[in-house]
Image (cartoon, rainbow, N blue to C red):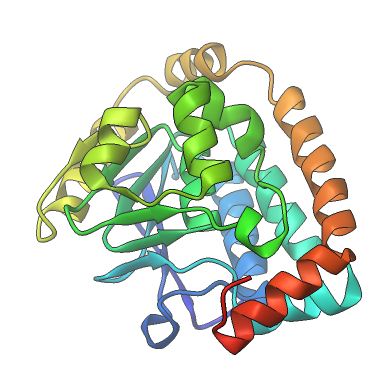
Length: 250
């Protein structure tokens, strides 16, 4: 477990909160492990009926911790903790809701594609700078984004690397509602409690019908991970990382 993830339960809702404000909730390997354990434990606990993902004011998450990410780049590997988390996102049965305020970068955007409801504040920012680092999309976003957003918007987000504000994310279908910062978690919790009060077997069955077989998502996660590892070992990615660290354009 890590002190940077807080897990609380109330009225059938398990809230997993990223709590590393000094680093804008950049996610470390230890944080990935705790998130995975929290989701899996909640799945097995009958008292938990809904998962809610949240951050801190101004930061849902700035993405992967740069030190961990640089070690991935140097080793040409993608950590098991990341893959386990992504596969857990794809296979949970209970509804997932996200409350986003501020930065949602990289995995901060792609994990939302596994959520059933997403509420965001007006100052939220969504961006996936994978290609700028010589990499490819992850979290099965190459499969899920075209389904959610349509191919043109998905390409804009994942390949062009465009920044979406909250209203653009809402119009594209990534966000259900834009809610003032002071109310975004209140609305997310209200929706979570409403879902938690519904007949659970029926809710689980309906969610499975809507989301379909997760095995195609798992297969895409693995395909992306293979390409991600390949790209990490490439000269193109190494050049992009050096440019990023030096503050110079690639």
